[in-house]
Each structure stands twice: as structure tokens, then as C-alpha cells.
Length: 72
Image (cartoon, rainbow, N blue to C red):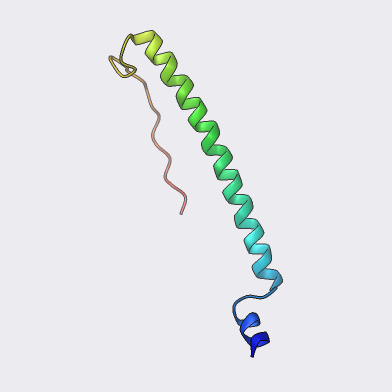
């Protein structure tokens, strides 16, 4: 019975393991991208704060291109 349950819940199916590795790599890639973007955002906010005085958002007029659609 235990062997049947282990096989049923995904024991060591190579396709499942490959998919899990692929998803773990994707999560790591996205986390790295998030850190990079946060660093870039912090640098831009600091530069804007120096340029515009006390508030980092006073008088900021940034030309932002059209946002890209989210991946689904």
C-alpha cells in the first residue's frame, strides 16, 4: 500500500523532477531580477531626491515608455 501511495503522490517521476528543477531555476531567476530592479529603483530615487530637493517625487517629470504586458 505504501508503495502505491508513494507512486501516486509523485515519488520519483523524472518529468515531475525536471519540472520542479525548471520551476526552481525560474524562481531564482525572478528573485535575481527583482533584486536588480530594486537596486536600480533605489539609485533612481536617490538621484531624483538629490536633483529635486527634499521629496523624491516633487516636480519629477519622467517620460515612461508604454508598459509591457505581463507574462501569463
